[in-house]
Image 1: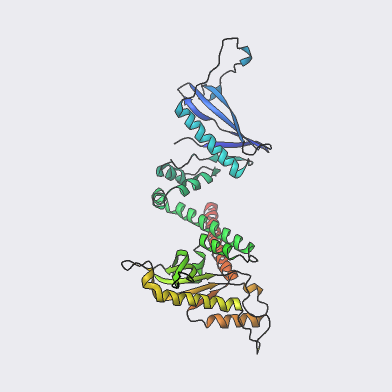
Image 2 (image 1 turned 180 degrees about the vertical axis):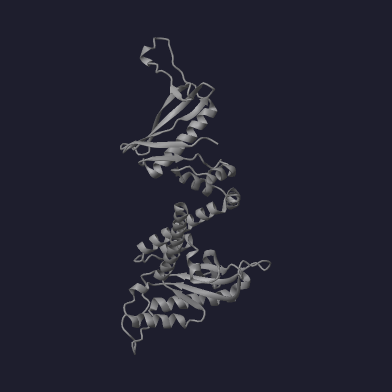
Length: 380
C-alpha cells in the first residue's frame, strides 16, 4: 500500500506535504513535493509543487540533487522529464487526494497524516490501518473508503479486530450520530416544514425505536396503505411503515411538526383542555391508515414471504412540543388524552430529543468511566 502523506503547516495559509515518490532505485529517486495553499483568487486551485531528483546519503537520508539553471541552456539544447503511465497514475491519485483534503478541511494548523485509501483499496488495507492508527491520522479517508464499500465487505474488514478497538469505533459512531441528531433537531424546533422532519427521521430511523422497549426497524417511507377508488385516486399514504424486528408486526408512523399545538389555549370545562384540531386529526389520520391497511393487507404483500404482518399493528404519531404547553392543566389534559388511546401512541419531538440526549449522556459517562479507570491503573 502507498505510504501516508504527512501534511505540516508552514503558515496560516500554506502547508508542505511529504514527498510523493514516483520513481526509486537503491541510490536515486524522483519525487513530487506538494505545497497546499489557500488560494484567495481561486479556492479550487489549492495544490502546487516541485519535481525533484534526490540521492541517498550515507545516513540513508535523501538529499536534493543540485539544481540546474535552465538559463544556461543554449540553442538546440533541451531539458526533458519523462513520466511513465504508472508514475503519472500515482501522481494523479495522490494529488487528487490532496485536493479533496483541502476542499473539505482547508489548510489547518498542525500536522496531519493522510491515509491513501480509495475505492480500489483492499479490505486488508483497511484492517491494517485500523489495527494501528498513527497519531494525527485523518479519518476522512477511512470513512470515505468505508462508505464506498458494501456492508458485508466492511464487516469482513473489521471482523478480526481487537474487540476493544471495535467497541471504541462503535461508541464513537454512536456518539457522533446522537450529537448530530440532537443538534439538528433542537435547532429546528420552530421548523414547521413536515418534509424536513420526515427526511430527518428517515436519515435517523433509529430515533423512533426509542419510543418502544422492543426492536423496530423501518421498512419504507411514504408507504401506500391502499384505499384508491375506481378512478385510482384518494389512496392513503403513511409517512413511515416500521415493524417489530422479531415478530414482523407492523407499525404505522405519522410525522407532524413540533410547531403543532397539543391542547387548546383556553380550558373547555373544569380546567380540562381539549386536544387541538391538529392532534385529534393526526390520531384520526393514522387510525384511518390502520383501517385501510387491514382491509387491503392481502393485496399489498407477497403471500409466500410477507415483508410485515398485521397481528396487532401499532400506530405512532410524532407531534408537538411539550415545552410549549404552558401550565400543568394543559400537560395533564394531554397526558390523559394520549394515555387513553388504545391503538395509537403519541410522542412529542422534545421527548424524542430528550431520550437521545439521555443516550448520549450514558455513552459519554461510560467513556469518562473508562478514562478514569485507565488513569487509575497508570497511577499504580
